[in-house]
Length: 425
Image 1: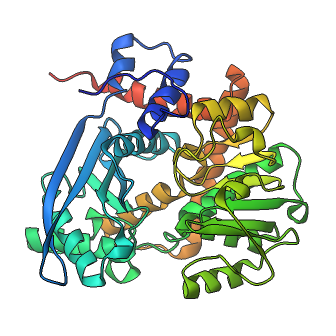
Image 2: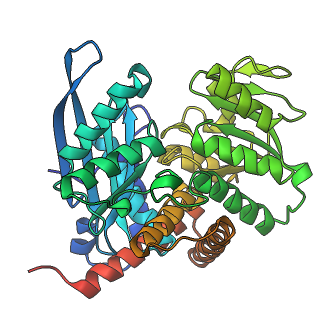
Image 3: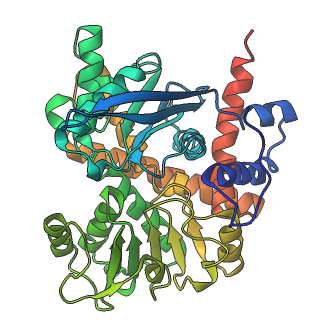
């Protein structure tokens, strides 16, 4: 049974505890019955599967996977599939809850879900990765379909994994169903602009925040990006293209720093060839912890949850933190950043570009009519800019930080939908 979890210190706080703590802070500003408040704390359903995969050697290895639906009051559940040895049920619960708020915040008709398999995908051959994905997809068949639950890529997965997932579902039902997942390759129903959507959205909200504070000259802004996967690399690239100076980036192995600015297209090419940004020419190698304390104007944590906390939030030198990852800041880290006057653009706002363009992909698949890239990116820009203004307005109205304002905005929409629908039976 899921329980409401009190706020704790960083040493004991996991992702789900962080999500619950943020929720508890936000609902104080909403006049909701305690029964409704309690209802929105709980995942609607949790699914755990244990399944075999045949390795290339012929040996059978068991793997564990999860899928959690947090809330479906606004529509079918939506959320990525994560392949990582760090996957836990609590992490998936937290990510599903954040997906509920994220979808509601940008006003798209989805609930929140998340899934994952406990595996390091780098240890699998292509054939093993395909077999694992197809078996995991078959285990999720009782849950997924285009009108109830639509998976997407996340950490450790990509468009090819989504294509295998879609094909497995389609072979089972007997006809092609592109809309059962998003984040697919273009050749099987993917959308223009989906790959760069999350990273691009991070920079859209960063620019909105800078503009709010009267800072409109990109050449005067230094940026550091922790995490150089899909989100971090695309955020860094878009910022570079707009004229911002990206002075530091990092991946799982470490980071690089050049106070004069990094050539981001060259860093992307180097990392693709070498497997890491480390040892990039004309840059100094640094650790991920050092990156978080890099002298810069904007820090973009785009890696894992729980990166900024009580023990290191005082070391942050940035004036803005724009969260590309889900849950990168713990509640105690939030308190320190807020007390120091650092402006935090929260995850459910800053990284919502992915779910927005996933929604566009789903809509296009359902109607079998596709948009060009300009239309996709223009729609993304409008939705994210509008969401930022709404959060900023709520922050000013209630005199609260941006994270709490974003959660208040989202929770209110979900709560109103639940009240309107009523409780069955």
